[in-house]
Image (cartoon, rainbow, N blue to C red; front, side, top):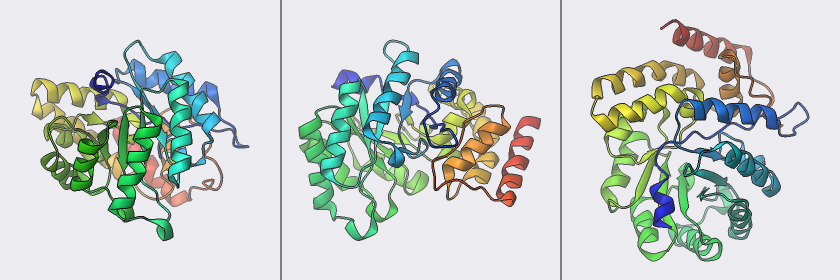
Length: 298
């Protein structure tokens, strides 16, 4: 397993899931998005996360997406599959399906429904059970504000489970990523997901990023990673600044439809979102259009 985790690093875009107008997966469009990112030099691919509308995807659809990713990835490049389910049994079932399909790791989100949010002991049991039953590398997707995985719990999971080995830090921005790094052993893989501060996160020791901005700006993101690795902080900061304002226009509710609109403005048709994410207000479109136009003029 450690060999598997060694190859999960760097810039890994969570690919959007293009749907047809009737809600079916558009394989031609998602394969094109995978190719765009891989040609830019990304280090792997993630499918079925929140950017990919993972909670709307059935297990058999995740299996299809894993197969498409594996078809495009080079040998040694990993595919990370999102697991976004509301109970332990469902997460185990989805994890086993992802494992059978050939995923290298699963990225498991804490349960999210407000009335059913467990305490830390419940979340320990959640991840411990998935580890024991699925038996493949697990990255925690720490994205639920009302059910945040704190550094002590992540450290305990690292020590007391065999397969929990990484965390994607989405809650709390840069300070939370730094706290996670400080509170856990160096062997823990902490991935960034603060989309407008990727260079900063990498300089603080992130193992890479699994972040939606990589799917939008794969070339800049890969260059940020390369700059940080060779110590070119000035160029990394310049690239972070290039991505900063477009990201401010994208952040917010109904994120997948915002990102797909931005991709369309860049000439990359990402299809439709699944209902009920079907409408982007005109004022939000104008805001995104202005940001992308300014990005293209730079």
